[in-house]
Length: 148
Image (cartoon, rainbow, N blue to C red; front, side):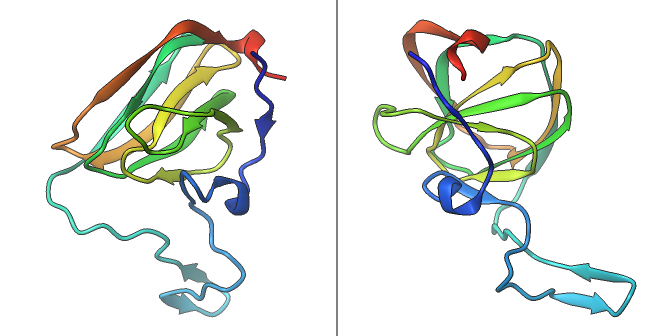
């Protein structure tokens, strides 16, 4: 099975969550002309959020995971990374691959897997500390040869 790596564009990513960059229609919540614009792109009322640092060395995975109770933020820091996603449901369906070159927030329940294309990817992750992990075994390994 070959998966095309899609570019992170909000119109393609919408079934899975949000690309964390302001759209043309959005206005800053706070702005100082010529100095900064501050946009609020995602808001979640929750206690006990945690920030994690993922060092992804594996170039393959054989299961997807989801978190039915919390959104999850992925912000790429180093390396070339692919995020493989399937829409939220009881079991994952069709998978879509995106090059993770911008921060994103996944909606609760979205199935996901991470692949490092260059041997080491580092990603900042934010999620609720009370995260529930669910897994789905694929029955096969998805590796770098699966992408075109």
